[in-house]
Image (tube, rainbow, N blue to C red):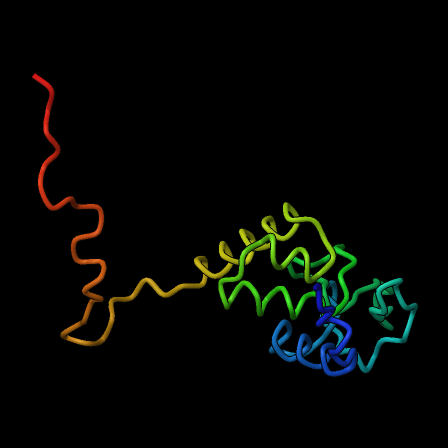
Length: 151
């Protein structure tokens, strides 16, 4: 049975979460940098996302502007559930079924998210002088004895 989890999430709470995490320096116009308080409510998209028109440069923007979800048409609940599923390591097929989108679409966004994550990953060495590794990976890919070779 498919359980529509996205229907249980509050739209306003999802928008607040996305604004806080996608725009940590404040939600503002991408063109001129004017804060949202200087913009006016322009329209609501089919998915319920509010578009704002800047009061200074007249450009239109929304919560997804400047992100990989720009122009996607996804609802805020779908975006949060996708992010949650990718972080948990759920399969693209499972996420696609839960979100009501195609598997290639989920896979594409997963790859974009991972690329963004690797781009901001620190290249500095770890500050610890000692590190631990998982024993399970110590002999990964090795066989106990060599395979017999035909003569």
